[in-house]
Length: 121
Image 1 (cartoon, rainbow, N blue to C red):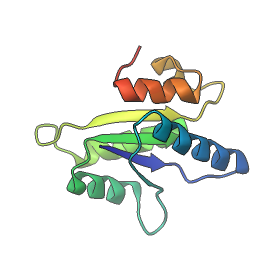
Image 2 (image 1 turned 180 degrees about the horizontal axis):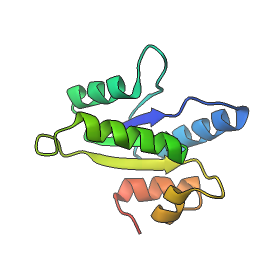
Image 3 (image 1 turned 120 degrees about the vertical axis):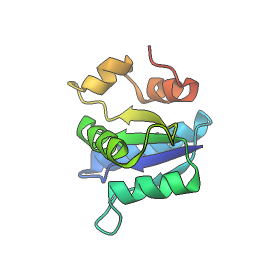
C-alpha cells in the first residue's frame, strides 16, 4: 500500500504537477492515500499516521528538498528493526534534480514505472 506525501504547492505549475502525478499513479496501478502537510499536520505526524495505518511504502511527491525532509523525518521516527519501510520518490523535474538523476528518470511516467517495479536503475 502506498502513502503519498505531496509537497504543498507554491505555484500553478506545482499544482499541475500534482494533478498529473495523481493521474499517473492511478494509471500505473500504484494509487494510494495522498496527503499534504499543513500547519495542522506536520510531516512527522503524517508519517506516524501512515505507520499506524500499516503503510509500508511512503512516497515523496515534489522537490528534492521535500524528499530530504521526509527522509529525515523517517529516520528520526522509525526504529529500523521494528519497521520495514520502502521510500519512493516522484521528483519534481527541475533541471538540476539530483534525485531524478540518481533514479535515472526524466519523465513522470518513468518515475511511476520505477515506483511500480520498486526498482532503481
